[in-house]
Image 1: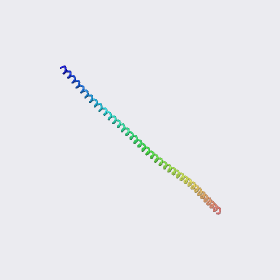
Image 2 (image 1 turned 180 degrees about the vertical axis):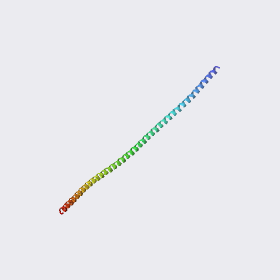
Image 3 (image 1 turned 135 degrees about the vertical axis):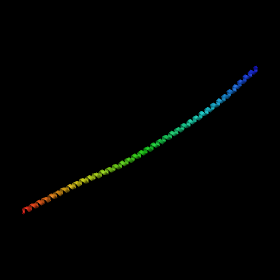
Length: 142
């Protein structure tokens, strides 16, 4: 019985050692799988970070291009407005010169009319003097 109890204990120890080795193998395999999953997750994280950085850079570049297009459009609009303003100013200057010329002609016409009126008045006065003189001679001759 003593031998059998010792054999039984040895068998239990061997069974426990075998189970312990099996558990250790399962644990080692689980550790390997976990390490592989961690590496895969880290690789995915790095890829995602790289993709995010690319997307961020592409977005930044697109925003810069959009801003540049907006600036160019604004600059074109400003240039067109400045060109139109210059045209309006040129038209205004030309209109002012035409008004000045018209005012000058009107002034000259007024002077000519005044001169003509004075000549007509002088002519009328001379005619009246002649009529008076003629009437006086006629009256003296009677």
